Image (cartoon, helix red, strand yellow):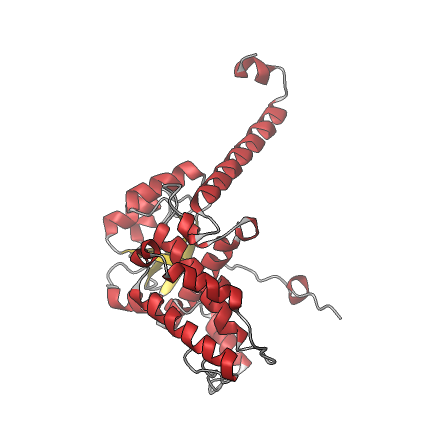
Length: 320
């Protein structure tokens, strides 16, 4: 039976539902394939697929193991000895010439220091400041009213003043500060791609489906991605969207604090469109695109959507 004859034998509504379900299944199958091809348990096994970012695979496994040593001494009742399995993971990676060639020097040096201080802690019980530094004293606390005023002052802006130039250095500083965003096991595998050339911004936004009415007046654009090879196994299959979303929100708050205006632009696109954006911008095949963020200075007299918040009792549930 041909597709045309099959459609004729079913109601139009049924055919549309079936088509939509098939499209969803097709996208999920592609997502699964890409995740499986981009990640593995062992850093040393990363050569089997071209979609694996071998550097990220090795670095994230090393960070994960090192974080296990760091957090062990932060517990209120730190036990010792602890961390033997994590220690062996670090030693195995550092003993591999192939892995060392991939890893940045700052990470290798930090992990070697962690090994030394972990051994000292297990031997003496003395907590070392490099491995587990003292927490900062809380010297900043703002009144609720001031915090609420800061939050209320931030809106999605769709009318930017193109005559006011953006300082690239300020955008770079915002990313540096937002790089402190928490992530699973401190892997911090998020990445911000900055585009501040007008034509390049336009080409990227042509592929986004919510900016048609103002894309020609966006001074700069961040594309937030996650490095898929940083994640491991079935349990972490959705973690990159969580970590990438946390980073994107932190970046927007930092930009807001620096006096810049922003608009989140969702990337709710099928994989074929994502492939096109990757190729156009130069984003690795092993990076997932989480969201776009338009950045600039609001135009004089700009307006914002009302965006009613839900009532507190609709978003808060207190469990006794």
